[in-house]
Image 1: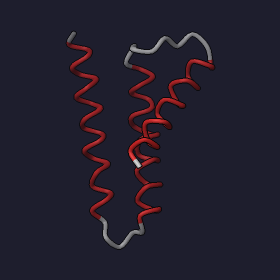
Image 2 (image 1 turned 30 degrees about the vertical axis):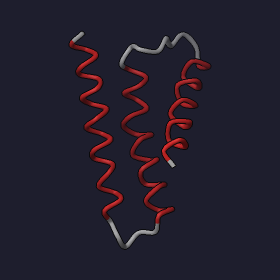
Image 3 (image 1 turned 90 degrees about the horizontal axis):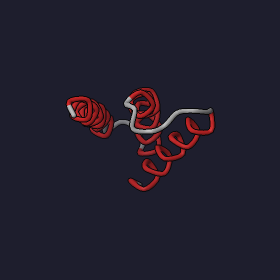
Length: 77
């Protein structure tokens, strides 16, 4: 149970950190969106892989988690 709270805390921390990207007014929206995607790819994606919620038996499982992250990102926009 503590592992679950730690995971959600990490996830929230990374999402909160990435929200600062949208405060940079000099950047166009597309650049902000790409920077946010890169931050999520480098922080949230490994967290999703390492938290143990998803079975990772094969490379296909990793691709499924990646596609979940992509769908999550697209649903926000």
